Length: 137
Image (cartoon, rainbow, N blue to C red; front, side):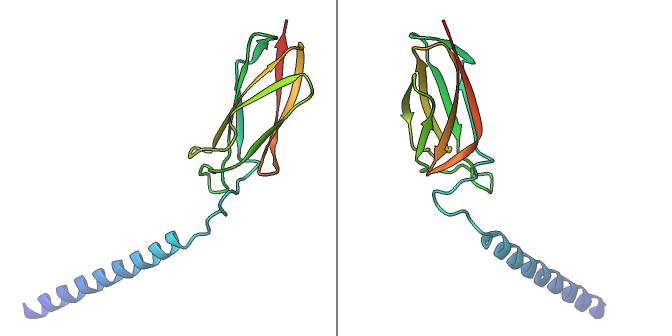
């Protein structure tokens, strides 16, 4: 009987020791992973949306929202943005620096009808996505 109890205590001790070592290994792996540099983002993972899909010239605006995303899939805060487009577009930056969600916002309007291709730049790096905005009479 005593022998069974000592074997049971030894096995429990080994189990606790194994779990402790495993937890220490996993916590170092989890906490030791590389983190993106502050202010960096992935141009190919970042994405832009706009609404409505088309607007009337002179009196309607299109809301552009872009989300800067890091390589690890998390939002990139503090990215300074610039929106480039052809002459004829009025770009009104609402939130030019990305917030905690990685989002920037701008209103875009035009006095000229047509399709306009715009690009978004964050911290001097152009996003992979190009947007075609349409303004009608």
